[in-house]
Image (cartoon, rainbow, N blue to C red; front, side, top):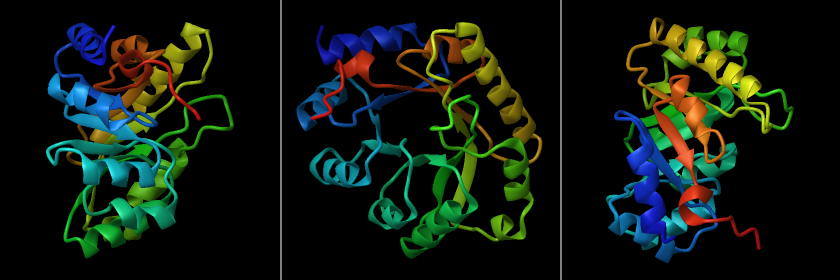
Length: 219
């Protein structure tokens, strides 16, 4: 199956209103262009340097999403162009994004990452930290970021009931957030292995890589 065929298959399965982020990390420009020619415009990267290089090389109407764990010292390299940052997991990171966005006279859309998995390796805020952040004076003073929703990753496990429970928990936090902040529209949850469950539990943005581009190349 070609990238184009894979992409079209997945798009045909997604309900209306669910946005597909094609996860292009480690993938060459040729693969991304094949997806681009097939109509895909939103791509997700998890390494800032790689995303910057691709942004420079590829068509300018591509929306680049930063989906990986983001270090504060890397924000400045992508502040000029990034369309959405998925993994905002601390007030300090948000402050840095706001600072760099201001330099480019931009308002950068962000998702707050919530820790829903049982694994300690996953990053994210818990409910208390989320509430503290959005109620803080520092947050209210940030004029160059826009929180548009939440993102989370379920535990990497075969137990579908647990995955479903974690996604349902994130959806309830999302619904709660819509009552506290305006413009909350995006719930990014679900990847190649579990996006079907995520959509059933209310996700409207899925991050799919290997099902489009084939197995990842770690070399």
